[in-house]
Length: 147
Length: 183
Image (cartoon, rainbow over all chains, first blue to last red; front, side):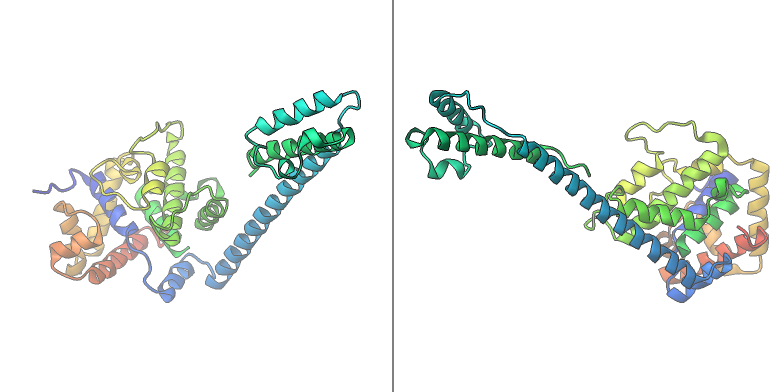
């Protein structure tokens, strides 16, 4: 057994619910509602289209700016990588082996073509430099997006 | 946008003030905000849970109710997580309207009105439809406790939902006319 509204306030609320539940069925009907509010339907549509376009453009530009900043930061960090000439062969190999054990770099192609033990000192420095760059890139990839 | 206009008029009628338009906000501003929330991804639109239009309507409704709540001086109220009276979390999450079994924001707003003013409003509406039996029938069913949704009213009256929608639109217009065409 249903019970009706207990007072006028509850009835008012029920009427508000009922009135809000019904939307215009047709575009013509919707236009009439807008006109009753003193609005010009076409102008309203144009304004919302412009708003949506502006927001979408802003979003796209925001994403591009974010990507650009990320790229610049990456280039800056990578360009600063330098392997000290003080490191001897054993130290270079040890660091390269340590990098190999790093799960972020273990599968890197850097290690597939080269065997550190057979490389010259210069080649080891180059390899370690590339490894350090790869590590920076891996770190940047793990950073959450700015968006 | 037409839906926003309808809501604004309905709430203006119910709250007996232009509270929805407080702070210089128009129905258009609420629609613009809804569009912004959706495009910014803050509305969390999930196509599997409802259409975009439904979501936009829900956001507009929630934002208007919040404005109304704020204009009525209840803006200090804080909603706890899962609070059923929170218009944003509840409806944006479910993408659907909720019946009056739990206190809704609409209920809270209507409860805050002066009983005498509300009584006059209801009397004026009933007087305006006194000679229109089909509209009186709808109001009577709501007074009898039929859930104020078109399909339940249609079922109670034994008529189509389309016919109920039509009658509710006419009732809404009557209410607007009573408030000088501004409600």
